[in-house]
Image 1: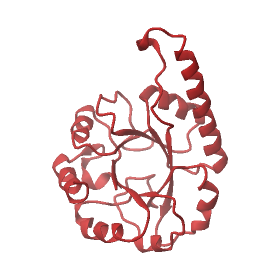
Image 2: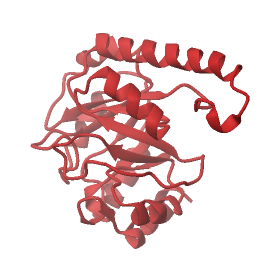
Image 3: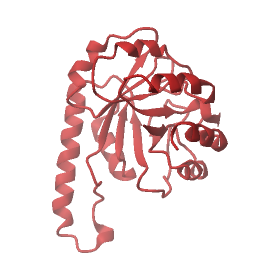
Image 4: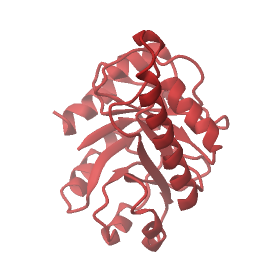
Length: 231
C-alpha cells in the first residue's frame, strides 16, 4: 500500500516530508484552498510522485502546470466530466509525443523538454458522507487510473473529518483507490481494520490531521504513522 501526503506548501516542510519517502506528495493548485501552492517545489527523490490537485480548472492551465512543475499525477477534485478527462489525457499524450520528437533535434540536454518516465496518472476524487451511489463511477472506469474517496464537506478536501467507511463495503469494482478524509494517528485501528478487507485500497491519503497549521505537516507524527503501515 502507498502513502500520499497532500496539501504541501512550504519549501522546508516539503523537504522534511520528502525525507520520510512517501509515495506521493500533493500540491493544491486551487486559489480558494488554504493550502493553495504558489512557488518552487524543491528537489527530492524521483521515487516520490509529484501530484497536482485541481478543481474544475481549465485544461490548458492544468497542462501548463504539469509541464512547469513536472507533475507525475493529476488529482481532479471538482466536478470534472468523463469528457473533460478524455480531453485532458489526449492533450497530455499529444504534448508528450511532440516533446519526444522535438528533443531529438535539440542537442543540449538542458534545453530539452522535460518528459516524464511514464504517462501522467489521473486520480478522480468523489466525496462521500453517509451514502454513495457507486453507479456514477462506471463511466470513469476506463479513463482514470485511480479513484480517491474523500469526505464530502465545505472544503474541497482537507476538512479533517472521516466519512462512514462502511459505505465502501458496497464498492463493486476492481479499480484501485486512494482512501482519504480525516485520517490521523487516532484512526490507526480503523485503518488497520479496513486495509485487512478485500477492498482494492491502493493508498492512504493524509493531510490536515498531521498539520500544525494549513500546509505545515508535523514530521514526528507522520513518521509514527508511516512506521505503523509502511515499514
